[in-house]
Image (cartoon, rainbow, N blue to C red; front, side, top):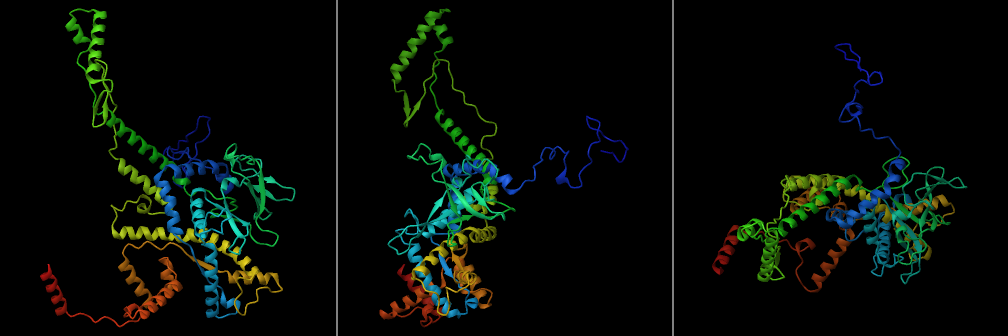
Length: 555
């Protein structure tokens, strides 16, 4: 390093010139603040895979034992998926060569057939008969948040529904390289066919997944639940011999050549655990202060005994002390003293209880906790109010802005995980339904062309779909309704888009209006204005004043 003013060159301990200051402070290598901070540049798998198991184990532990972490995962499911995930089939009618009306009529029939099977309470969609379609999608959304990815495996189990397609979920840690314990490695295994196995995923020369190596049982079930096959793996190809998916691997790619997902909670684990520990310490301190709020101390100690005995008679003072303690026990009883059910400790003469008081006893605990929760909320893609459940310090404007930012995260995560899982599951059912003949292609569409490439295109055009999940949180329904009204009047939005944003389906809503109108007419009741009834006559100020006067007289 050269001092430009004095011309003096500064050398290090070995006589070499010290490096000069960096052009960018961010790359400074000699400052006290940044000198020891030298993180390496690594590939996605090199940085993630060796630490994946440990980080995700900690994330799962916090979800089990921390209320905020548990609530965050629950909130992730509720806002991305909601109670039910509804199909909106949108066949590409222009490429299929049919009209929009034909496509809409056909799509409506397919939607009804799919949900009749997928949402059946007997859970025919689940090989274990435990979950409905919406529950599968909710589970994938939660698992992706905790472990960064989710796995669905297609199974074949005939059912009374008429379909054999069903699914099971697989814990991400079960997908691992055979013979390797956990994921604490980043080594590849090269197979004789030239494929590479990395963290349980078999990759071809392009880096595309062709198969998955899945433990038959969870590795922690060894010696438990009679599991004796934890050391065995099944190789499940991504596609079967007919070209249909067998494994659905869901994760959001963040870097090039990334093989597996990583927990979205990883960046918040340290601070969430620290907050958890502080909460426990504060609770223990409170309990300690309550437990020793009162105690009984006798004044008949050594000095008082000496005054009574009149001499330094050790044996006499010992007998006197024992006599006092016996009298004390006889007076208080062996159970001690109880005040409102709380037992007071009785001390040995001259003994006292001392409780250490911390120098910074919860003075800024709530501010500290709030600061950590704001960081956690940002890491989870939530607003502080959503993550903490605390709306007491928020104004309408700030809450609305926070919810809008969080909604963008919901839309992106829904498209990357929930919509993808739902669409692939729907396509596998659709394939079976077409083959069985329970679903027919739209009139004018030839589903079995001679060209296999053209068949793939037709399948993709027929199964193009969108999904309706949980609606957007609305803070002021009246203001939102007025905004929607203006948007419709100025042709900035479509009615079906507004309803989908609120978690509703246009066709279902209109069908409900038709049924409601029919019920009013069958019973001879006047129709409400929104169903085409006569509009109410506006009341005059005189009529309102008369009604107010009549109400005042009744009071």
